[in-house]
Length: 494
Ligand code: ADQ
Image 1 (cartoon, rainbow, N blue to C red):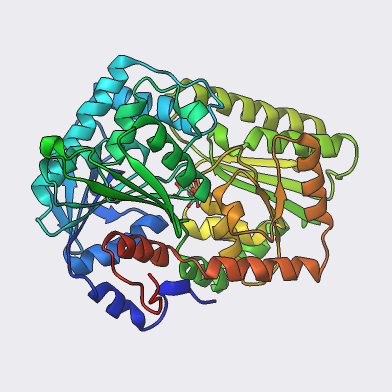
Image 2 (image 1 turned 135 degrees about the horizontal axis):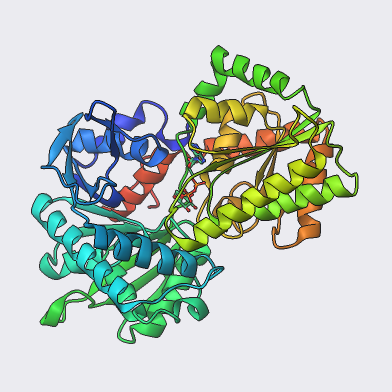
């Protein structure tokens, strides 16, 4: 399997096209502390995509360590400079858990939980965004390419632009961007839009996010001239340019993120992983069908709906508990936020109820792990799951869907995928489903369970082609080339 546009000898040339240093800002630093207190790069595709580029250009990453009141002096790992940002306990509660994860997160995910709008939390968000901007201005040389990530830092582009009008600034939103009817609820909606307009390039996962943003700019910034372009929108305005009257052009585009395809493909080829998958299946009693879910335990991921569909299929005998099991792995996340605690209780109540009713002694019908797993174990699970259930109610992209496909070098397994995940735009050969429709969700699971070769193989082969075409390094290159106004290799039109 190829790894898309990043593969091959062109890489050095691509990176070499611009030696401008890259400076990244994201809520979290790309490193974590090991048991002996030293730092190691965090797992995850984003880090793996951006680290090599930062190394090559002598780049810097600005972010939080993840622990409150923990801001060590800047340090360097593998040639990448890391600039920790201090976050106090109160800021953690107000900026991170409050405004970012209890206002923006639910609002941007269809307001499926009521967003909190609290002036103190907003004030903390402004303060922390200002701190990130100050750090960026300190570490970024004048020719730097500044790339700001995600919903925690939406004010940073403008805060940097005001003090450095000539800067090259990109912003990428990893989560969905909502339509006007939802966004308009935000008491600080104009500030947020103006914050983003400080960037030269604002990127979204799906074209609908780009259109929503363009429409909102048109609505909230009357002096902006917003026009459709070949692959997005162009907004001409003077936000962040002070009283100079200088116009800035913000390009609004779509950049669907992906994974490190080669990593999952190679892990799936390892004998130890394949053996572990066979052993796992045997330990479950070699059931005919294994359904799999792997998610952060987030209310957007539709874990409860999926379990209810499974319960109802057991109830009416469509699925037989002696021949079919489900595995759900859920990563702990944002445990202090009430909506997350409620979601966990509901999921765990369903696990108890379903096993209470359908398990036999020593044979649970629903296996549930509430923990994070090393990547080898995730791939083992991906190889074991006959049907992967990715059923979020709303998701920016959903990397799990792509990881499952990249791991299935045996060209087997069926992906059931929510239409409300960004990945549905590319993974059109999945069994696509509207997870709000309980009957449709049941039908999709049954379709996956009953699907035979050759359809299974044909669909998986098409999915693997789609994933291979869009590696995460290709994603980063495409964004940075657009931001630097450079043509992509082999693409003279851009
Ligand atoms: P997330 O909401 O975190 O990301 P997702 O894209 O699915 O969602 O990524 C989750 C990652 O965590 C995957 O790489 C997965 O392997 C890993 N993971 C999940 N459960 C795990 C477990 N139990 N143990 C170990 N690892 C586990 C946000 C947006 C998404 C968008 C990404 C990237 O919400 O829509 O796809 O950013 O832009």
